[in-house]
Length: 503
Ligand code: MN
Image (cartoon, rainbow, N blue to C red):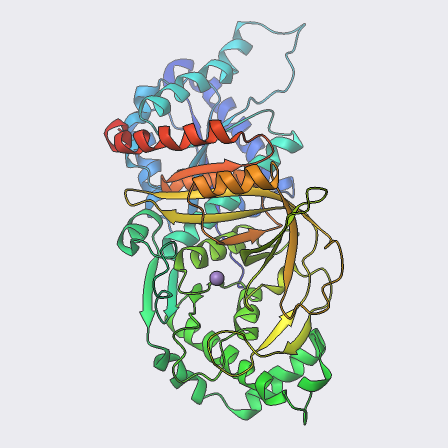
């Protein structure tokens, strides 16, 4: 994936003129020290840029307007070193269109017990300055991230880093273009949705193409390009004997290599970060793009099958947020259950399209006939997922709003080998357990498709949902179905009122 970590966040400290120039110089100095400390922590994915302390409504408005117009700035961290009367923040916060967090920290970790006097008290007022600032944000119903703790604390730095990654994801969201090869699978409800509203809320441009547009690209791929890409497959994957040169299925693999090159070129030419396919819309293509879709996901593109543009966009954003972190992310589907009460679980998979970034071991490259669609046998990568803490994330259109649903999972080793399964898979335990987790997901209307990730925690998605100002619900170890149903009903009422509450 291209490097997306060359952006910056600004560090803005609030104060006022009441304290005199000496104190304000100290505030400026302390802020620069914190910025240097955050940058030096080695934890943040991007650079924090120090900005001089703001002391008046005009300075606050100016910095917010500057942040809006500076393309490289993807958000601001705000901190109240002293008291900063919060009416001063109203105009700035109304104007600000970038994500922001409230870092509720103070310069010194410990009270200087034997030294403390009123000068010290006047300079180090975060404890109450942050509350004044918190009030105006609450009163204006602003969605913002609040992080509390000393700035040298590793846990605090981790939270700042996570917020920076969410801001990077939000920046990507605002520029994301999704290419749909074909339309939605006929009669399927959950993959549909309001694309105009998605562009308003998330920034996504969602464009449909006839498969013929892609076929034109496929026809232009040269044999030499296919040769080179096949050689790469040989290096990266365990290629099945019947897929090797001169063997029965070798041409089927070459067809997917051709698709991969063509699709990548198409995406690059159009500036797309995510795409969908649909096995019902393949006129002019001999195979459903399997290996090709897997390889594009591996390269960082979002993907959704059967025209599912919502999960395609989500997956791209998750891949952007998690760039450089341990653990992969993939398009996923709750496919089939193991309902043995002694050890229940879900086998997640898809017809073909699971991303090899989640593979536990070197994937096998194989060709098998596809049961549906009536096309040639497609090449695909077959593997089992790495294990660990993971989650499924999905986005649905409720008619009057979007809802993002997260379900946390434990991905475990399959309970036995799957020698006849010709697709990649993941086996997981749903939280809080299969019955309650699946019931909650179904009450919430969650799709069979999701963006599955081993790299992120629910907190990233919650913050992302707040940036988009859409509904977020989580199903985790603490979920009780009866409470969860109430939350869904209350949210219905909240989203009728939401617009009228905001400043
Ligand atoms: Mn599907």
